[in-house]
Amino acid sequence: MTIAHPAETTHCERHATVRHYLMCRPEYFTVSYAINPWMDPVKGADTAKAIEQWERLRETYERLGHKVSLIEPIEGLPDMVFAANGALVVDGRVYGAKFRYPERAAEAGAYLRWFAERGYEVMEPTATNEGEGDFLVLDRVILAGTGFRTDVAAHLEAQEFLGRPVVTLRLVDPHYYHLDTALFPLDGGNIAYYPGAFSEGSRRVLEYMFPDAVIASAEDAQVLGLNAVSDGRHVVINAEATGLIRELERRGFEVIPVDLSELRKAGGGPKCCTLEIR
Ligand code: ARG
Image 1: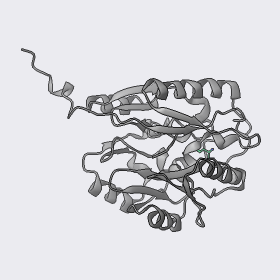
Image 2: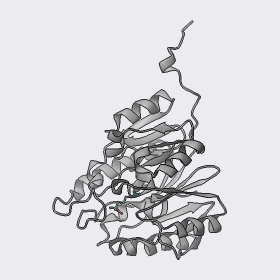
Image 3: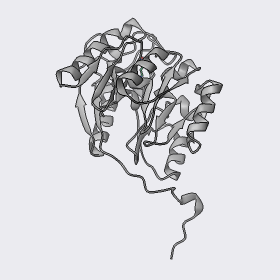
Image 4: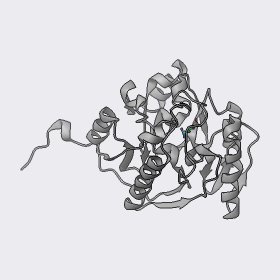
């Protein structure tokens, strides 16, 4: 008989569900402007290296059994690789993006067209919002960020269009300008997050809603460790987020570390490159 050491005991068996992701190959990726503190146009970025890292991410999803669809990249839109910002898709209904900065404005139409051409019910938003960058979907609620990119008016608009309750959370640190840089769903009912990215009131909301959440350290947040993608069992996450990875493993998740260091120069990680089609 073997007796499990308490530290090795997982809370429960984790179950993956098959996902459908939309991604955009970073063919025109570079850092040529700065709209968040991670970006330095003087330093730029290595496009070939970004493509290589992105290809590994795409292969990872396919190896896990997920479906990956692709949208054609557009020259002159270097951030279009960050597909998460292109829309929010729930129950086949597509709430479009409306970008905060003119540098990315043209991406919204490209993403909305991709969905419209494939027969999805799309809505062109009136309120400024950056898609899944600031909207994260759980089973019973959608968590929505505001403070930098997405207006609260978009939270209401999305709630009305999608018929799901939306909870507003205020982001306060410019390094964590999108909700998905500071928080990710572990499954349909629990999350991991970095409290330092949120206002005092929003921290209390998160504590109230998710008493069993994984709390990430500043070190893990600084390598964009919260910009991770979970299918309920496998967590695809930046390899540098070592503390967070240890805690996820302790909780019974299968962690798949990836290297997206080149895309981090634009302030993005695995989740930013991934738009889930539900
Ligand atoms: N350079 C992009 C921007 O600042 C990065 C977007 C990252 N995407 C995300 N989902 N957090 O808009």
